[in-house]
Image 1 (spheres, rainbow, N blue to C red):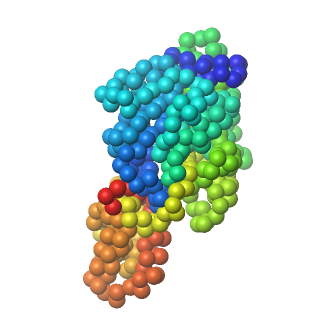
Image 2: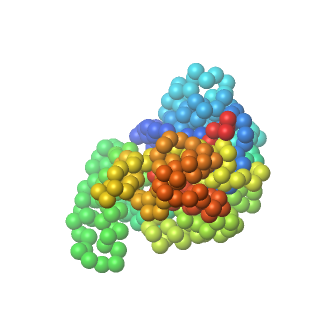
Image 3: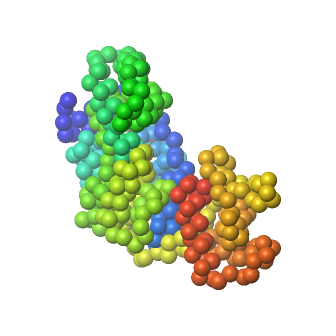
Length: 401
Ligand SMILES: C[S@@+](CC[C@H](N)C(=O)[O-])C[C@H]1O[C@@H](n2cnc3c(N)ncnc32)[C@H](O)[C@@H]1O
């Protein structure tokens, strides 16, 4: 294996050979991202003109989506010439505000790039050689404006470790002199052989089976770059935080947010996230970092609009049950307050204040006296956080709000 800049170039060439066509992730669109940051206590930059940097942008689907919400500069960096070419073509209509740089993120300086309100490092940090990863984090730290948000995705926890371990086995059984389709066939055969010999019982049996199944379900492109590529590392939020904190960036939380204690320091929050991911398994995480501007008002920030994916259904006992459309989760309105708050969320998107007023107006119909405002407000905060954790509602940010 090569190292340093030549390894980064080799990884870029692998993406030329087997192109990756990522789509824009809705939860990472600018309004959703700024809404999440505001809900986590950050005061996002107020204007509609946001400058966005995407490190490891690939064919730049996320950056293009960002350009629909902002008239600011859209800058992408990628080590793959083919991805850069597709990215350039994709945003050509945007003129000078669309800029795609081909190269190793480690070879580009903050001075060349300027300052940004949002920086993405999505699908990339864990396939970067560690020196390139460190350089990308340093770039992120130097380029993020006050009030700005940085997004890093990574595999974490035991799921991440198991996936990376399995990738190491497949890599060792690979023959890189073969054509990519033959390498993939070999990897899939090796996966089947491993799946056939997992013992029926044992400490890690369940994790091994789940990891094998996830890897088998991966597309050829993902399998090629993650399992057969030279680098595929699980990452700790605590390590990322330690790299970013000296430059003033703070860990906010994951998306959807983990159950972290409110008000703790950035490093304690990141270490708690890692501890949670160890005990609950972890997975593919989106982590939010920020350079704090003015302290925000969290869930009650007037710019945050809560959008529900909740559906209300009548229960046999006459009560109401609330589910998300994919029916991954359901929640009962056990108390009249909770019921009124859930009904308000189902009525359509609204700011915290609008939800609160709507829920309060529903209470008399449920035969309940007007609420004690403090308890009612805390109850609404709690239910919003609970539903957001379960991905049943989403915050987005409206500048007009
Ligand atoms: C899985 S793709 C993700 C692309 C895009 N962010 C997305 O989510 O669709 C990973 C990208 O990281 C790029 N990459 C890997 N190492 C890099 C480095 N050192 N510098 C710049 N780009 C790099 C690859 O070329 C590839 O396009």
